[in-house]
Length: 96
Image (cartoon, rainbow, N blue to C red; front, side):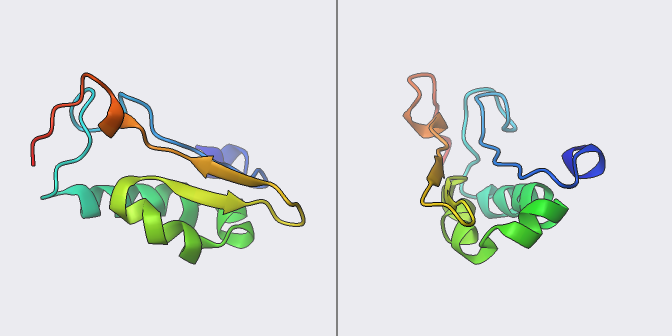
């Protein structure tokens, strides 16, 4: 929807506790790569402004491992860290 209605907007999303298959549980090892690559495609590759503006190679280095990444804003000294903190939540249940 962001790409459709806000195609010229830089979009820096991050995960919340209900953005995974199970409530308060990070993706298990058996499907984490598929999950994170699908989300990467939706958030970055299919978003025209993100694809044109951001360093997707840098983002992809950490995003596929755990859904966290760094964005260096173009023409600015500002960096944004998008953290996926679900693994540090006291309700997190590790399923392997």
